[in-house]
Length: 157
Ligand code: FES
Ligand code: FES
Image (cartoon, rainbow, N blue to C red):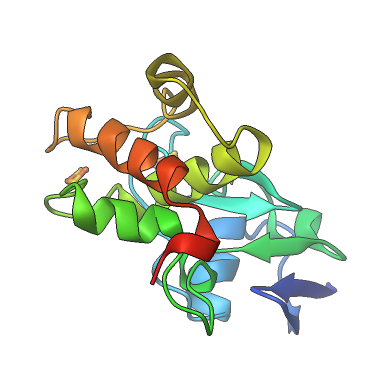
């Protein structure tokens, strides 16, 4: 099937098998390997992308389901004006160790801040409850998201 997806703001077309998962469309067809493929069983959240602004585990979505939609990946978080506050927050608060979970964590956090600019710790923990991290113990991830909430885009240098 021929599909067209707006990937990080750019229209991309591809011929794909109907059975191809979105995670493979993003990684293998579009070459955006920042989206990680972890468990393949919808448990880890490493594969999260934003589909029309909503976080989805891309190992649970068919690529053809994204036809005509917007897909945003971790590669699209930073703009010409610098890092997204979430990315800056993960740097400031050491919100990662190995980094495998980080793209999915940051996209979930970005989507949370879009709908709730001042989330509580409980809100953040709820938002990332579908994401597994084997390294950090989550505390610094929560701090990183709070840092981003306290430093919205216009104040990040
Ligand atoms: S690879 Fe999709 S949830 Fe783990
Ligand atoms: S930083 Fe290693 S899995 Fe989260």
